[in-house]
Image (tube, rainbow, N blue to C red; front, side):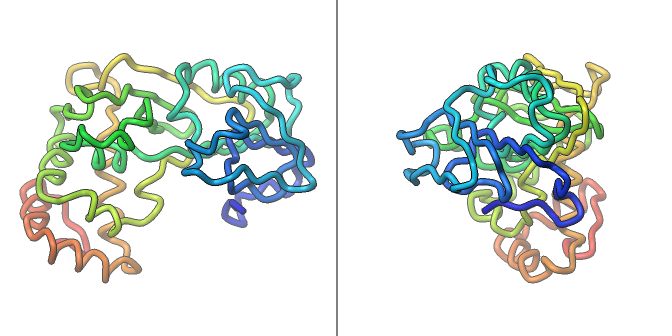
Length: 256
């Protein structure tokens, strides 16, 4: 069963909702909301698992069948990248919950897997790049063939563009820790939501782009001594990575 780090667990929560639990529900959950009960396509063919102490409700994230503040904690992992209307889904999450946790694939992972591989349906299953430029904000940018090929004109955007050229990301992804490949977002009471029609170029639009966070995810991973063996494998398999880091002055302990 899914768990949060011990220091972030909702120990005092008595009513806990998970949206889209799939075959691996969150530990301690009291209510589960699932859209596809019998169809396991979005669960990789796995059967839905409902703990004996939890109640299963069939419904949509955009229309939650619960009263205001019905839950002490709402857990939504790998759900929002699928929804058609993320603003409405987030409004509903905030309406029924007092606090919660949201997790999605990170733009670093999503763009890396999708770029240059338009033939794979699995890479286009998600509708959005989801990231958090601030502690209380979630931003959604559309994930399409056109948008995947675009990069911000800022230094971070160009660094990521050349990094993806230097690697086969389908192989390179295994060198990176989970925190680099997921957007992790905790909230309490409420949070801000922004849906953009296209990729934001921070030099033109004056708003934060997603590439600053992507660069941080990549470089911080390359400073993690616990990943030293995998970083060595990354640079051995893809030696051009060193040149990209040097070109953009992205110094790290393990890639230099």
